[in-house]
Length: 117
Ligand code: FES
Image (tube, rainbow, N blue to C red; front, side):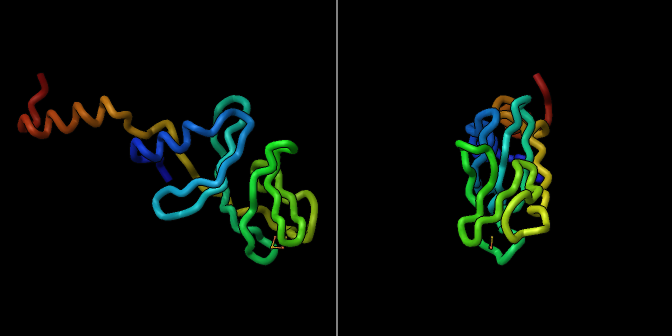
């Protein structure tokens, strides 16, 4: 999934390095972690044990499932509790998101009949 709109870009940019958040984008919920180098890792927030929603544990830096105690690393790999399968990986491409200025230029060019100034 490409972070394709300004509001999505804003949601993702609010995630600080070494922090995870549950976000909604393009009609789906994602568990998104930004690593210390600023790269995003996204997984499904649906626990692979019995389907509860995981939450980010900011003190211990992992995803927690409160239903039966499964714990997942930031990349979704399970390391404790009954879940044995990783959280489903999602592709999030923050780099290709158009910023507001390029979208405004494209809109202006469109209104001018495709001519660039
Ligand atoms: S549903 Fe997550 S540990 Fe059971």
